Image: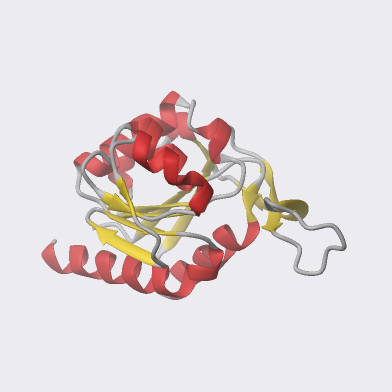
Length: 192
């Protein structure tokens, strides 16, 4: 079995949602292939509610982050080449959920029983792909409706495992999310 993970993203993907798993998966011996609508450089963003704002924010503020390069376009991805998938959050899923090639990839990964980790707004992609019906998931609270519209039960916990999915609320939950995702990947390897 291949030790490669697919990481779909686009402009305005959240930096910590993306870079922590990007490097953590490599540290665990996986190759991480970043995919986007096109093979090119993408902008990440920092999303957080400012803790010291003189005027309170009800939602996250967005600031520019680092760049990350997609080495493959969605249309060229063969899901069979991957052991699993990691879906980041940020604002990118708002438009990525309309990409038919990405939705095809997600559906094929689920059909193949491959583990899929998803954090924050990434749930919008899973919902659009129609793959979370009957599952229990978590996500950032403002995306609970997206989870429910996809037919899932939303719960507010740091991490939820309902195979083949492991979901988390935000980048604050990266450590437990990655612990569970890596365990799922190792279990699948042991079955191969």
